[in-house]
Image 1 (cartoon, rainbow, N blue to C red):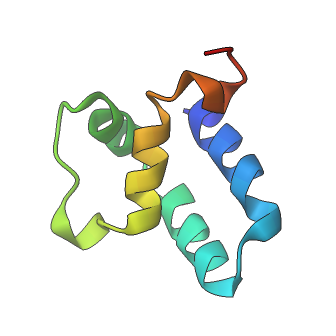
Image 2 (image 1 turned 30 degrees about the vertical axis):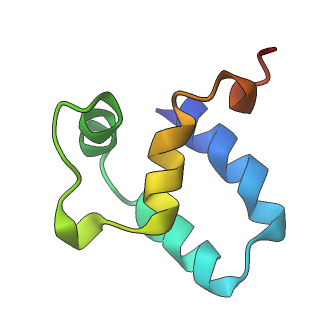
Length: 71
């Protein structure tokens, strides 16, 4: 999980405003088991955990260019 989440955070943190930084902190507090279940689609993201930033992070798992791989 650290690779996926860490890569996403590194790409975003420099240009994040205070609200987005707070949301990143909230997401980082979510257990790895929950994040993995949501990333793999094994479980849906609960309504109380939904956010645009979390959805962007979950979508990044399929974007090979996000991880520095050529298209």
